[in-house]
Length: 539
Image (tube, rainbow, N blue to C red; front, side):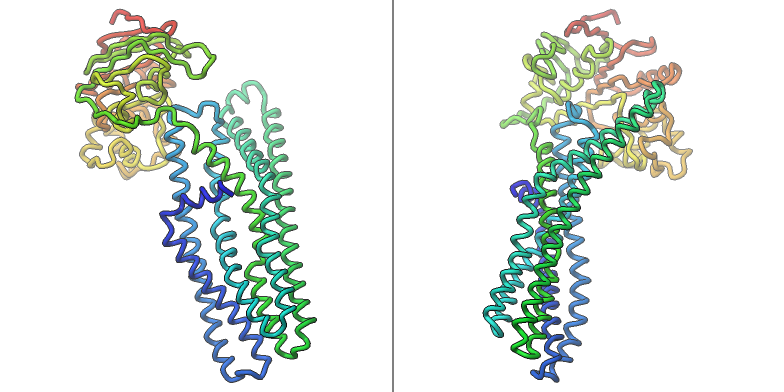
């Protein structure tokens, strides 16, 4: 149960809402028990005049309490899940900012969506009914003992079995299968995402049948895992139902000696078992959620590639960049990406790094941003080793515009404010003017509040790159790394983009990473990456 306890501890910020939901739920449960007892007492002679009045009070009270129970518990649950998603996203950002590595995007998506959503059973379906069962148990025992001790023992044993024993067994049985279910869901997402992402290649090689068969096979595996899980949940629910019916039968048989008072006992027992009827099913769901929680924590607790040092140095005032004898490989046993690489980029200089795919150009950007750390050598910013400063401060000083820079399904304003959350409208328009995209934005309905659509599809490729450039220029970064910023653009759009780049960035350092040059770039130095080293070329 450690993964579940860890997940629940992450919701501590919502403790007041969670506690309020618990209190309202308990009040509703107690009102339900009292209502059932009062309804049974109508058939007796005791307090006959007071019972109708009590029913008139308890009936509306239970309805109101149930309404506020739903209101408060759902509010608390949604807040807790929001905190969990934010925590998980921050964990991913710390550990995978440089890329997913050996993680599949579909698997990470399954953890972020499905495995996090699986935790919604913990509060409403497990914790609240369990606490309610702990409150109902002594009340049931006291009420029944007033009539018959043996009946109290039998009903209490059945209640404990339904409320605690069966959920525990169901959770234990479901925990092992939960890993299979979560993995099946992840496999299906991977298969679908691979098929969609590579749709052009799939069509080009006439592989639609094979890809569809793979998706269908993963879907069949998921359906089989879900059927098995539903059978476990159904068995647990059936066992709880039988316990409740056995308790009512025992009450009718033993309680008949007490005459009409048996009716009060039957109504009380019925209300008590109704309150915990779903606990065994919830136990099985909690077992499934345990496996999902383990998958969430496995990713979130992975090693941070470049943690901040225990003693953080102050950021330097200068922004000249120097790499000294840097050696680096992504994985032990694989060839070095860099071998004793040395490179000097003075502040305000424009430098191009050229080379074919796989030579290490993007790896160099990851090292400068400290998304990865070299096995040996140093990277100095303003004379200070970047390994000694806070990563957040370093990345505020260095901007990155890559070929896969993402535009979110939000407004132009929201996309720009990622670089500078406190920017004014004047600063936003100034950045758009610098990137020569301001006129196109003014022509849109809503201007800065125009929605870009998923992946910025409302813009052409060239316009999207200019908007991404405006975002980079808006940031306070003194160094801009442009990692293949024109990839996928036609020749004319590429030249126009690079011409614009020549006129912006004022005193910032520019590191242009590219396969080749077009001839319009304004550069101070050119380096070619070869055999893990940088070789100077004529500017």
